[in-house]
Image (cartoon, rainbow, N blue to C red; front, top):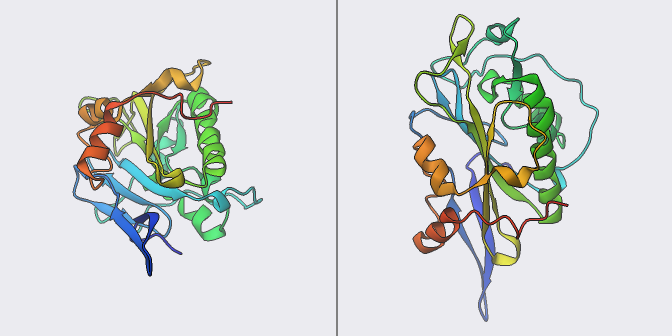
Length: 247
């Protein structure tokens, strides 16, 4: 199934004679009004900051594979109407072209893997951050996708005013990056959010857990707003990470 419509099928509700699926569209709100849908991920592009304010996708258990695909060149996203930033903005900038939806999450299919190399899906990241704690968090997300039979991911940089930038197109350099995960194991919703400074860190991942409510105040984005209100409020105010395996 291709999730271009990005509809979450959380569980099956069984009655005596029928089985019905409860669904909702779980894309976050967009502050930019430029939502771009690719085959396996969706993003909200910020022309002001020349990058996505969020990238959202489902990471199924059977997506977690390790194929030896050849890395393509970064190219501009043909679906971004205002034009995504040229990769040359990053050249000699001192910053990595940091994936938001990781290429490693899309190694189950060569086309899905290639789509992560659109410049709409990258953001300036310090190398020690990109190859260090951010990489550790990406690996942990893949671990949870396998352990919990899939998770839903929303990720991006915190795009605030007066950020420094790189290149002729002034690509903003976020001070922080975030990930929000939604799990629905056995019909029970769980949510966890991370806010990580764009710098080297050897701290354990759970040190960066925050509530989704806090993240929403920082970004102006309403995450998982299509959840039932009572469930959304309960999940988004919490920052307890003990229900997630960090081993």
